[in-house]
Length: 78
Image 1 (cartoon, rainbow, N blue to C red):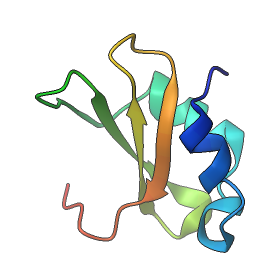
Image 2: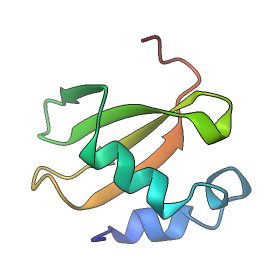
Image 3: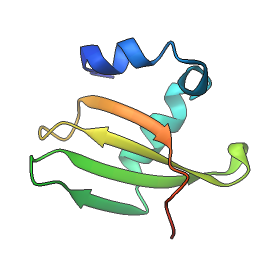
């Protein structure tokens, strides 16, 4: 899994440390929704059943494979 320096730095935060790599890979490979930002970064969301059905947002760089950010999105509405 390719990641940015920013992603690796934020991984140590208590709210981010519990996010499993397998969940991130799941969102990347099976997004329920995708949005390309103006800067080319790609937002992908998917529901994570193991986390009470919360939606995980993963931000990819414009190459479509490098993980820049991942967090549970409280504001996402399917």
